[in-house]
Image 1 (cartoon, rainbow, N blue to C red):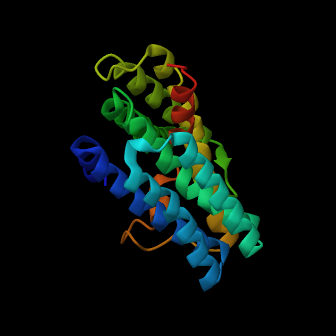
Image 2 (tube, rainbow, N blue to C red):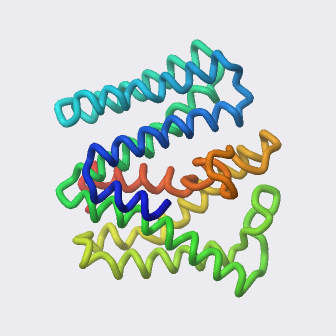
Length: 241
């Protein structure tokens, strides 16, 4: 999956947008499943997720990003009202916001390296948390949500993300100001992981889906990317770097 993501980032914005759009639709389907949405509500959720992305693909750079964001919010509100479920509406935003954020990052001047750096932070967090948790162990972070996560893993993930984020700042042309947020982004990634674990526990399932044999669903693979992509895009949007 890492190879596919990196290849899509480097190949071109159309390929990247297409891959992310497919991921957004898959996330919408999995969210509907976790919410126990019926057939009609699921179709509504998927359609609402796809429409802003279709608009983006058809119009490309000609459509203001503010308009796409407004369309995403409007779609979420429409789903919430029509299905009479705030959770269904939230699913549209959960599927769209990280995808739109990654597309926004890819469209920046140094978009390829900026997008790759964002994903690397999440990967470094997962790897650092895994090895620190296994090596050190200790108190559990949130045993009711994710029995295997420890405070040592969280700290290890934050340290790994900070080290890698700063180390790649110069070769990736990332400002050290942005790179310095890597540890906080790692904490956000872990929060995204715990939130998805809570959703699955709430639904009484082990995986969000079965699209990736042996690895669960798309949500299981991108739970940490969701908050990190949105935060980095927000920082770039306000001129933080």
